[in-house]
Image 1 (cartoon, helix red, strand yellow):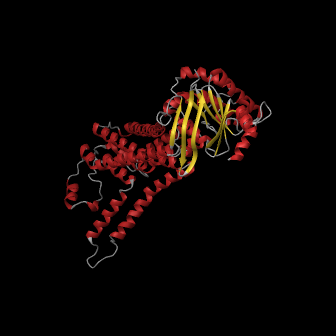
Image 2 (cartoon, rainbow over the protein chains, first blue to last red):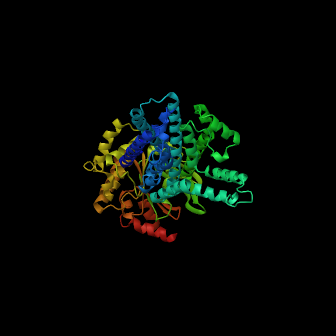
Image 3 (spheres, chains in turn orange, blue):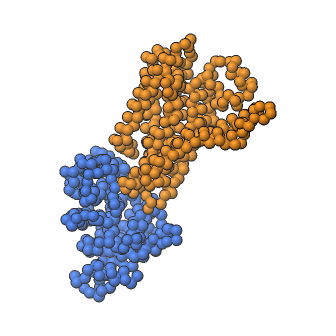
Length: 311
Length: 250
């Protein structure tokens, strides 16, 4: 079933790789120069290649925001294109199991995502070596590997979403728009909505006689964080920034930290060991795995139950 | 000994939320015959085909195709049965040969074996010269012929052809019918020909079944039906007369 990659699709994807590679390389070039200036001898410099915000944004931010697009492009027409071409009825009348069609669609997508991400990271690493003159250590390597796994999971989740829409909707345009709508919803409206809801539940604007109530501020921040965690985007970006930046010791915002936590943060400015970083983002990783599997499960169930006439 | 049945159904029924598409269908098809399956649009012909192929599950009744139950063992059935849907689809950005090779791979035929066979099939349907063109550029008739070639890739014992001549010009239709007949004679292939083009069915089919509103109202050799229904012998009848007679009764 790997024949599924049609030539145009593959061209599109390789164009994407090159484009992102070039953009990131140039950004990183600028970024590294600016970041390294003034820093005595930064530890774990190599990871800065991915997290440093150069002129515009870092690679990690870029992938968190536009990564879903890769998944959507790969998946939005996977089933309904076969339907439009009327090849789906042909496929199901061949001696293959019906679920192998949907499995192949998903797995081939995941394979492409893996190839894209690994090659991008390799490109950046390759460009980064001469730029920084530092060879990445074992810990940086592992951090990058975990980052890769999380990114593959995250984009696979979006692949799952778009395949699901391609199973449900007959027209490729509709399924593309639906996937994009979900993407935009999660990337913009959830955070906007989180702010609104938090303000409604715990308004901080109204100043009482004693000024702003600190309890209210805390509650507001809590609500906001809880709601934005509904967005896989937030889950992913919190997890990856913790993994890629060893100086980060928690995923929660400064307001939500307890006083002791804050003191320890300001006292001990050393990077967190890899295992500790991993421990912090474990729930995030489990969530990513869960939503990806859930999404594919729904896809699978819907596809298998569809009456053949509608295929 | 009689030739065995290749399709056997017993009281086969399919219901879609209250609507009965196929109503207690009992039918036997013998190996090697060309069976014409007639009926107006929406009579349940395609639904029956889908049940024979195991693509949709019967609501009640039994069906055996090539000795297997399509609902339980769809892979065994699909290995032996070819299906040409009414509007056959291809991957338009692949050539005819690539399309055929893809289907051969899905049937687990290694490329070394299939390439010779694909050449022969392209020759058979007269597409050798166009074999390296993308299917997207094909005319309706060429697509239909490629569809036949595709069905034959897996060397089926039984083929279901759903309106195979629709959209073909008269010459194309003639050649298609000749092809179907020669396949049946030379390769001992059973052909299940679903159509409402009566004149064509009369030309090539050994036996016919007439399906109206989900019920099989008649089945048998055309001559026999003519005798029963019109009370005439010889060639002085057309299938259309018989068909209309049944149609009016329902």
